[in-house]
Length: 162
Image 1 (spheres, helix red, strand yellow):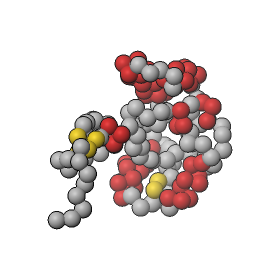
Image 2 (cartoon, rainbow, N blue to C red):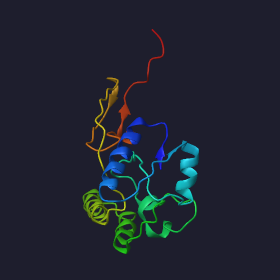
Image 3 (cartoon, one colour):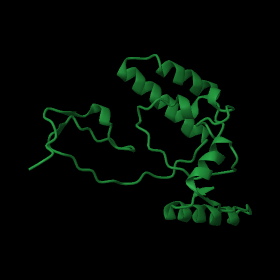
C-alpha cells in the first residue's frame, strides 16, 4: 500500500516489487488515497506499506513504538511492534530529565528498533533551508525534519509593512 499521489513512493514500490519477484514472491502495489490509507493503517488492514516519518530525534517514541499501543485499534503503532526492552527504555526516557542520559536512552532505543527491523528505513531526503535574520538559536540537525522550532527565538517582532 502506497500513497497514490507520490511518484517517489510508486518508484520505490516498483523497485521493491522487482526484487520480490526475483525471489519468487508476489508483490502487488496498491496506490491509495491518503484518507483511505490512514484508515487502513489504523485498522491494521495491510501487508506492507511505504511511509515517510518526519519526527524530531527527541520526539517521544511511545505513540509509535511502545508495545502497549500495538493491539489498540486506531493506534499509531500500526505495525503492531512490541519489544519489552524498548518499552522499558521508553518508560525510562519519559521520566529522565538529564539530556545526556536521554541521548543515551534514545541511542539504545534506536539500536533495538534497527535490530528488530519493524520498519526498513530506506533513505532521508536532502533539503535546503533558509531563515530570517531576526530568528536566533537555529540549530540544523542531520535527521528529518532538520530543525526544532521550539528552540528558535526572536528579539524583535516581524515587520508586516514597508
